[in-house]
Length: 102
Image 1 (cartoon, rainbow, N blue to C red):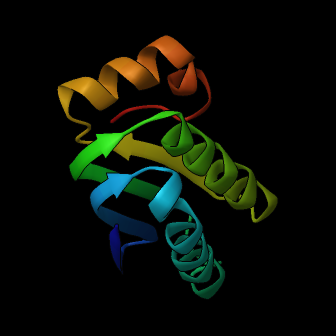
Image 2 (image 1 turned 180 degrees about the vertical axis):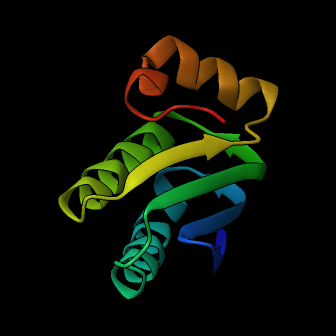
């Protein structure tokens, strides 16, 4: 799992690339938390899942954890570009009730 980020007009964009599973979650968590901590002035954060090739329940936990961290800073979180499989997992799990898809 690779994470890259950029910000524009008060939005922190975190682009995820690869697989979100038990093996990659710990390093992805550290990277994402660092990016969030460096961008506390952001008004919202958008996690781009367009390049995520696989996601299991660990990915749900990853996203919920980042949501909680962002909420502590008062930053809204959104998900964009999930593939069909990830979209189904996120829909069925109810993640979109907390983290809207844009």
